[in-house]
Structures are given as structure tokens and as C-alpha cells.
Amino acid sequence: MEESKPLYSFMVGNFTIDITKELVIQWIIMLIIILLAFWATKDMKKRPNKKQTVVEVLYNAIKGVVVQNMGEKYVGFIPYIGTLAIFILLLNLTGLMGVAPPTENYSVTLGLALMTFVVVQAYAIKTIGIKHYFLGLGQPFAAMLPLNIMERIMLPVSLSLRLFGNIMAATVLIELVYQALGSLSFFAQIGIPIFLHAYFDIFDGVIQMVIFVMLTMINIKIVAEH
Image (tube, rainbow, N blue to C red; front, side):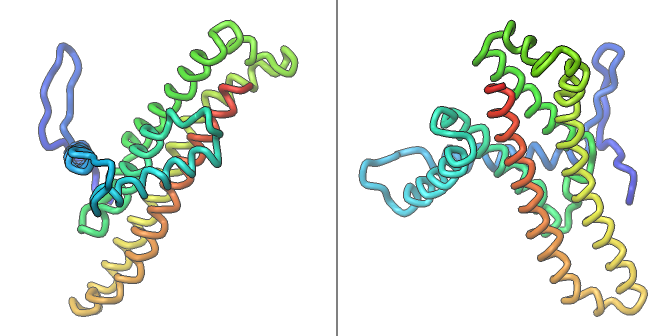
């Protein structure tokens, strides 16, 4: 694994801001998602065309997942859950284009996990009020307070480490295979790694996205209803 070096750095006060490869890839993917969303949702009609039909099928699929796992009253989370799923999936699939997935960088997965942590806690406070939110930390009895606080704090840690660990391990394995095949001959690197990319980039990438999104939905529901 190569150390991630900044492409460009600048100072903001006493802080150094690094523009890394992972950050640029995220910006590109975000731009692609924004442009696709704008293109797909403009000129919506009562009688859908092929483009609108695909969008509605995707929306209904995400809605079905949210309703099935969280309930009807959580349909407001469809945009967040859908965007999160698509964004993480595209990040994980960049390995198919010969670019190391940004999710192999812990700072990226930690940022995603912290975002979910804030959403979970903010929605719980909005739903039950800040008083009941803090009272809930002492349930079912006051002695559970330290454990309940630790459980909340461990949410972004477990989410980020799970995604980071699996993607990084897959990237390292693929690199080792390429190095081993390259020591044999250049032609050995053609064709054989396809099966590895199919598993580690596509299958594992999809699975890790599903796990991250499912745990996000479960925690939003559990913490808000505790």
C-alpha cells in the first residue's frame, strides 16, 4: 500500500488543508450524482417515459427497503438513505477503473460514519426531545449510563472500521495477486484478475454498502424509539 500524499496543500489560519486523491475522487463522484439527479428528474411527466420509469423503479426500490426496515413514518429518510447507498457504492466500485477505492482510506469511512452518527442523534433529539434523549441513556436503569454512552460513541467507530477494513483488505489482496502474476509474465495479469475484481470490487463492494446502509437505518430507528 502506498502512502496517500496530498496533491495540493494550503493554509487556513494555523491549519493545513490537504487536497488528496481520495478527496478529488469523491468530488467527481458527487458531481456525477448531482448531474445525473438533475438530468433524471427534470421534465417529469404524468405519463413516464423510459428515463422517468427507471428513476421511479429505483425510487420505489429504495422506498421499499426503508419502509421494510424502518416503517412508513421514516419515508422522509429515503433521499438520505438512497444518496448514501449510491455514493458508497460508487466509491467502492472505482477499483474497476484501476483507481484505488477512496473507502480504503480511513478518513473517508470515518467521515461517512460521523455523518450517520450526527443524523442518528439529531433525529432522535428532534423526535423525542433533548430531555428524553438524555434520560434514555440511563435506561433500563442508571447503572447502564456508561455502557449506553459507550454504545453511542462506538457507532461511528464500528461503521467506519468495518467499511475501511473490508475494502482495504480487498485492495491489498488484489495488489498482491497482480504483483505475483507480474513476476510470471505480463500476459498472466490479463484475464485472471477479472474474477478477483468481480468478487472484491463488485460483490464485496455491494455487500459493504448494504451493511453500512442497513446499520444506519437500524440505528436511526432504534435510537429514536428508545
